[in-house]
Amino acid sequence: MKLLMGLTFVGMIASLYMAFIYAPTEMVMGNIQRIFYFHMGAVWVATIAFTVVFIASIQYLRKQTRFWDIMAYSSAEIGVLFTTLTIITGSIWAKPVWGTWWTWDPQLTTTFILWILYIVYLILRSSAGSDVKKAKFAAVFGIIAFLDLPLVYASARLMRGISPVVFGGRGGGIAPQMMVALLVCLITFTLLYIVLLKQRMDIEEMKDEVTRMKLEEAL
Amino acid sequence: MDNLSYLFWAHVIFWILLFLYIFNLVGKNKKLQKELEALKNSINKTKEEKLTWQKQGVN
Image (cartoon, rainbow over the protein chains, first blue to last red):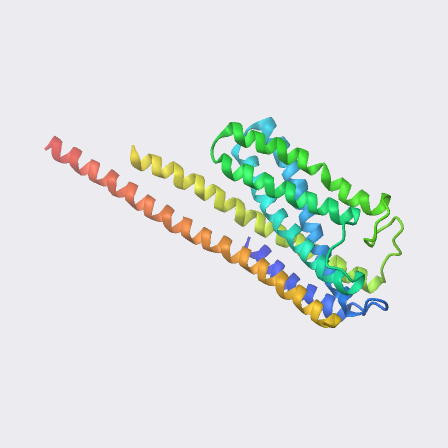
C-alpha cells in the first residue's frame, strides 16, 4: 500500500508537470484548457467509482457479504467527491470559454442528475447503518442510479449540446503531446482512486471491529 | 479575470477539496485505531481480572 501511495504521489507531480509544462498551449482557448487534464481525471475517477458501486451492489445482493456493501458505499463517496470536482472545474472552465458558469446542456444536466442520485444513495446508505434490509434497498438504488452514467456519455454524442467530445464521435481529437499528458493524468488518478478506496474501506472495517469489540466488552 | 486566474482558482479549489477529504480520512483512521487499541487493552484487562478472581476463588 505504501508503494502505491508513493507511486500516486510521484504520479501527481508528473501530472502537474505534464499539464502545466509538457502539454502545449491550446490555440483557441489558451491556458484555460490546462484545467482539462485534471477535469478529465476527476471525470475518470467518478466513472470508475460509480461502475464499482454498480458491480459491488450486484455482488452484495447476490452474496450478501459485508465486504461488497462496504466497497459500494466507500466507492460512492469517492464518486460523489470527484463528480463535485468535475462540476466545479468544468464550471470554471466554462465561464471564460462559454461565457457562463453553467448551462443546461444535455451532458451537464445528466452529470448533475448523476451527482444528485449518488448523494441520495449516500444518504440512504448512511441512514441504513447495520440494517440489512435498508442496505439492500440502498444497493438496489445504487444499481438503478448507475443507469444514468451511460446517458452522460451518450448525451454528448447523440444530443445537440455544446460540451466538447474529445474521443471519437464528432470530436476533433487532441494533439499527441496533449494525449500523452492526459494519459499520465488518467493513470495517476486511477492509482489515487485505488488508494482512497482502500483507505475508506479500512475505516468501515475498523468501525465494524469497534462495534464487535464493544459488544465483547459488554458481555 | 483572465484565463490564468481561472486556471489558478480551478486548481486551488480542486486541491483544497481533495486534501480536505484525505485529511478527513486520515483523521478518522487515527481516531478508530486509538479506539481499537483502547478497547483491546480494556478487554485484556477484564480477562486478566477474571482469571485472578478465578485463581483466588480456587485458593
